[in-house]
Image 1 (tube, helix red, strand yellow):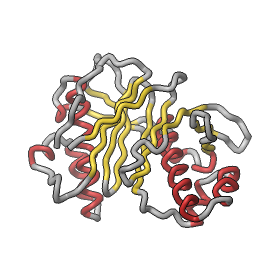
Image 2 (cartoon, rainbow, N blue to C red; image 1 turned 135 degrees about the horizontal axis):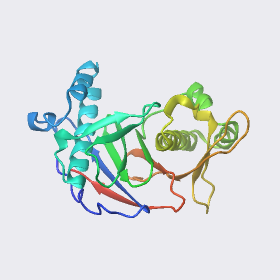
Image 3 (cartoon, helix red, strand yellow; image 1 turned 30 degrees about the vertical axis):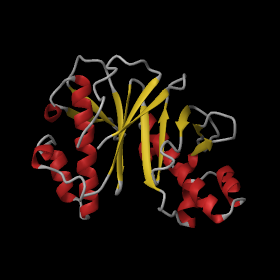
Length: 244
């Protein structure tokens, strides 16, 4: 696997998010023993716990990609990187210490892995366009205002927008690092025409504590819905890097 330009802009401004992505094919991109060797023992154990071969492959490829990128970016051995998690389960880099802080987030599905690197909290999520969300799932993840929006659409457009909502919500929750502590229908997506997309958290008390900047549909011709979210008050530039 080739990762290009991963070591650029170590001191990058907060108004920049680098996104590295790789289309997956077990035939085209077999994982070598050398690549597997950079993973930690816990990562390799997690691979073995996964039942489906596609899940094992995407998990391994995603974590190898993340380690390669961070290793190049920090000029540090990829195999010696150490990660910890917050109380809410958000991973962060615990080793090395004393270097410029980096925020990162990782996502993978059966046909793509991607990670986002920034100096501001960032989240990323990807789903294949062919994934169909059933009606019960849609009703669970969407806020009532979003449901009203998609109910007015024909089925193909309704499916596309529901998937876009879903990846935006996932990316937003990952950016703020609270994951499943908030129900998806408490994240409201604003993607009005001629306005910057954003998400807001709406608690049952009706408060609006956080605005999260969104960048939906970043790879429109890839067969995937990929969305990015960040907490930066200034909307950053998104730099996409295709890995091979």
